[in-house]
Image (cartoon, rainbow, N blue to C red; front, side, top):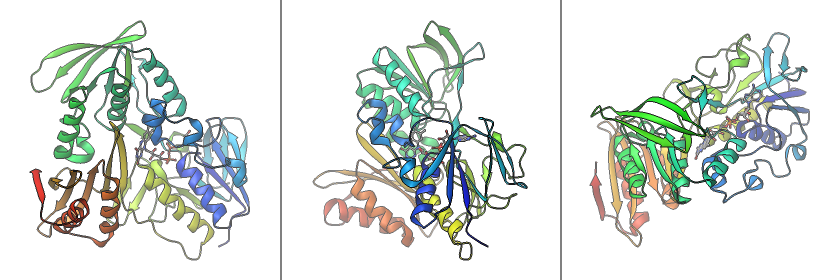
Length: 421
Ligand SMILES: Cc1cc2nc3c(=O)[nH]c(=O)nc-3n(C[C@H](O)[C@H](O)[C@H](O)COP(=O)(O)OP(=O)(O)OC[C@H]3O[C@@H](n4cnc5c(N)ncnc54)[C@H](O)[C@@H]3O)c2cc1C
């Protein structure tokens, strides 16, 4: 086994950029090619629905590689990868070019699902690229009523930005609580309450039955599932955050195994092909914790896998497995919601506010008689999350986690106020 001479990375966002950087840091001095359809330098996506959407940060501030691709001697081919032949190790691009590789890295991420109007055509804004966010920011500048569709982070964050800009907003969510799918009913209820306190008209358990066009606006007909009540809402600005699907269409005729993402082993090597790796949002990797395939749509997973992929390419004799320490965040109403671990919906949840100089609210998820701490969520308390993330790899019980956080919040234990569970 030897170090490749030509590595081709498909997808130039965080997974691709961090892999390229790590390869150079780890001494790769061969040819590095990056395939990416977007123009300009690599940028980070999380701020697109937060600081970049609100106008607080500009494109420079969301740049992923200081100095750009040229600073790490990577050649960018602007275009789409359209087909892959893993036997001849050739990649076809939308530009008509064919590239030969020694090692291929797949980092093509996700594509957002679109809302369809009654005429069957896509309607509303999505937030997947910087130009999507530019378009939505401009639309918000005209004012009017905003409708965000979806119960997850994109809709919740877009709502938060719209409210901070002084607009009114309705959120149409099919689930019982905002973020409930990802953070369970207890935290979901807290997030829903927070949005309502800031003035959002949150419609949980609500289904859209029609979206009619009215010039630039849209008229939504919705039904509240519990009551069967129908309502119509006019959206001057319509935003959708209704999920996304892995960008794997270009692999359809290849031997790479695709099953809701590119299937990889724990070393991020794609099944079905030699010298092909996949990572980030597009990958369904073998997770050593749960011993199943897992696809994760969070930034830290993509960045951490990049280090592993680069190591395994550069050290074929001593490859490493990826061990995920799940972590992600969201910014809403000027506060960070941070999540470490796996907040399963069926876990027991202690939702606690610690008294102290500043009251600190956390949710600690646990499982089983062993009281094994499965996840921690902090609200506007980054230092608490640092403490939680330090403790998580030691497999604490939820009681130990609560004790640690309480000490941190108050300087002394035993003042935890159990708010609800
Ligand atoms: C608006 C938004 C907000 C987010 N907020 C958070 C957050 O707060 N916290 C968090 O943890 N995570 C957040 N995420 C998720 C996080 O951004 C992703 O986990 C991360 O970007 C994954 O990186 P990736 O490189 O795997 O995929 P992506 O960032 O999706 O990048 C994939 C790249 O591949 C390119 N590509 C696609 N198809 C092809 C093709 N056929 N050929 C060549 N190139 C192709 C795309 O143009 C894109 O540049 C957010 C995502 C979005 C969109």
